[in-house]
Image (cartoon, rainbow, N blue to C red; front, side):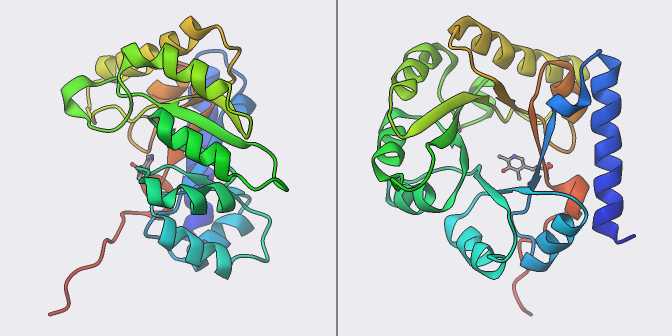
Length: 230
Ligand SMILES: *Cc1c(COP(=O)(O)O)cnc(C)c1O
């Protein structure tokens, strides 16, 4: 078995055990393979080992890999910070966007979503950790933003997403994810998605209701952002 296939099996086992520990059906928890900085070849191996959904943070990098992998039936998720001048590419080339955190970006994505594609699946990113994290809307903005995004014709608001401040403290992990779950429950919009949990904290996220866990390091190993040549 390749390292990636081996890692996938280990992550799948962690997901299954975490779900079963709280009486959830493991099939409710989907695995998003975060492939930023990884090669098209690594994605090809992950697909051969059974994965279909891949998350990318940088538009240009993602488009290059999508071209190289156009022969595979993959689903692409955009999970990084979004600049206005990138919304057209994102609306045209992705199936999901997990990192929408303001109305202007949502409106552009809706306007720019090609008519021959289904509505773009969207998560509203929320900053549940206060000062410690910069991305995401504030919790008090969620109700109004979610209501406005849900009205946009070419988007389908699926739920909320968060990246809490990293911590080894299990109680803090649970508290952050529970906060996101409660914000979603308060909306009463009938949303089906909570995108939360990464390599270090997927167990806590699943215990608190995650339906997508976004996993990079535990699948592909440590990321190499490139070292300056000597
Ligand atoms: C990089 C990244 C991940 C994956 O993190 P790991 O700790 O490598 O599993 C998940 N979500 C987002 C938004 C990311 O940018």
